[in-house]
Image 1: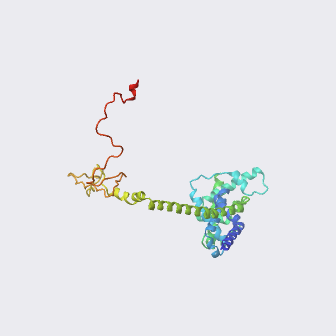
Image 2 (image 1 turned 45 degrees about the vertical axis):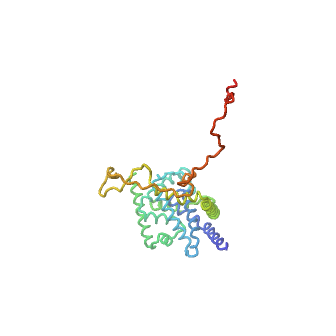
Image 3 (image 1 turned 120 degrees about the horizontal axis):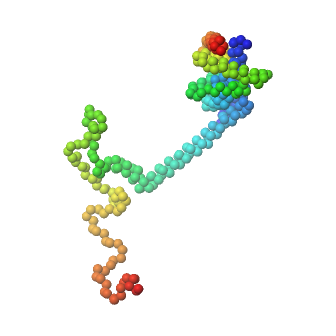
Length: 177
Length: 162
């Protein structure tokens, strides 16, 4: 009697091993906070365990898991909207890989990245979401379309609009400074 | 560096963030806790509730006083008129405000007769009750003679020895 239960648990453990990093990146792209991103990953797999009877019906585990994590992280973001965002450049510099830059250059680069990320947050929700999901290197345009339940061409057009809007904002900021 | 390459670089870095070490282990650990917690704590809680309910039901079933209290006292208390309380009738239709909330009737309202105690030899307070017309019970204890004792010349009070 316990064998199917053990099999399911082994299957979930295998999913954790394979997709934790991807889910962490998806969550981090929105939260920008390591602890929150890890919480989202854990919550995602708890949901999987809760709905383990559906595992056999899933065709694409990556898309299914990313969709769960994406909904969770957006929900979390919505609930924490009143919380002020911390501009912790040092933390960003530590977390974002910066190659062989010097400490000073690393902080300047981190500040610049933080500014771009802050501008991304000002974009319209649909464009912002596509841009953030496109940053996750494991996800293709087709997979992003499946996660957001839309077509690939829609994703491409939103991505184009998002990048141009962001570039315009950055140019505007550069002329103002 | 152009703006587009800056955007690309930021997104590339954001999308290639490395998770903290031991993430998979912590996730697997968290997945094991709710399963154990559910199986043990839920069974314990359900069995504790069942035992408590069984004890309460058997106590009510076996103890006549408790049974009376549960089955009769509540309904009797609801039906009995409260002594001394003013009788309030429903407010007249169309009234509003504090003054019209309670309507006191002009004429006295006839009071219903007090319900007769139909218990057998026991009042609500638990004391013994004699039925009407029954002979007065004999006094308890040692019977004392009605005639006074003859005087012996010695005071019966202990203080007289002083």
